[in-house]
Amino acid sequence: MGNQFAQRLKLCRVVRGVSRRDMGELLGLSENGYGRYERGERMPSAFAVVKLADFFNVSTDWLMGLIDSPARGSR
Image 1 (cartoon, one colour):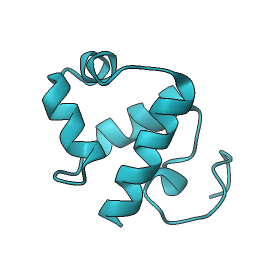
Image 2: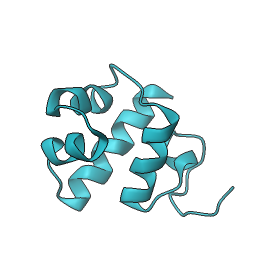
Image 3: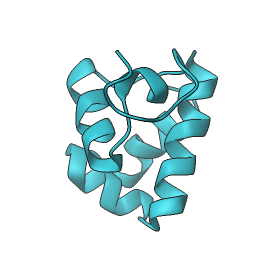
């Protein structure tokens, strides 16, 4: 699950055109701290996952790799 989360998180950020630094600021982390999520070195808290899903307008289940469709309201 961690690797899929990391891949999807990076995909969302790149598609949206946001820097790692900006994402870190959104979550109260350093750029490197956020980068650990994208590299699959760390998993964010549940609160951070919800905040990321809201920011990218995707479901938390999709972001975590539990479902295939990024649409909200799937669960």
